Image 1 (tube, rainbow, N blue to C red):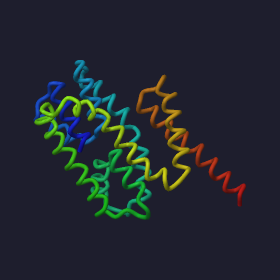
Image 2 (cartoon, helix red, strand yellow):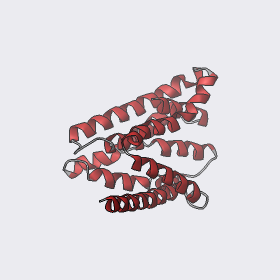
Image 3 (tube, rainbow, N blue to C red):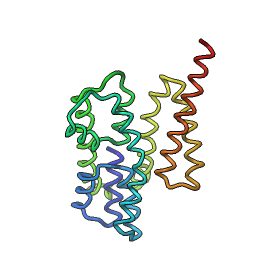
Length: 209
């Protein structure tokens, strides 16, 4: 909700209409991409550049989809298509940390709540955001980062491996970001850190065994 409100507030500041804000959240449903699109629109970037940039940023969704495929119960292709539309960083984090196989009903419940909240609160943020106190408007800018921390902490408490993985991925991403596009930096850091941590953990288990 805070992130969607912030998006609506920024959309109004960028100069797009409330209808365009509503349609962007309704049809795109990708927080990071929508934030980036607003930034590019504000400096007059063309449609092709916006599409290409957001595609690169969202390359990580290939990894997320592949990971969830192993956890979800088998379903027809039309259902899987709806799954793919509903995968965001938030829904992925919630589903990925759930134990056991994920049912279709649970997945649709998560997606529906997330999707509905994002679309509705984007419009609410557009309509009432500017009336909020300036200090609150400024603090809403960190909502996206705070949410990711909140999603990560429960996993950190369960497994020390997740702590190593998150730390290594953060370091590698910071390095790769200096000479790679953001999307490729995230994907590369995720893949490399996942492989390295898994190899080290397995080696440690074998040694102890």
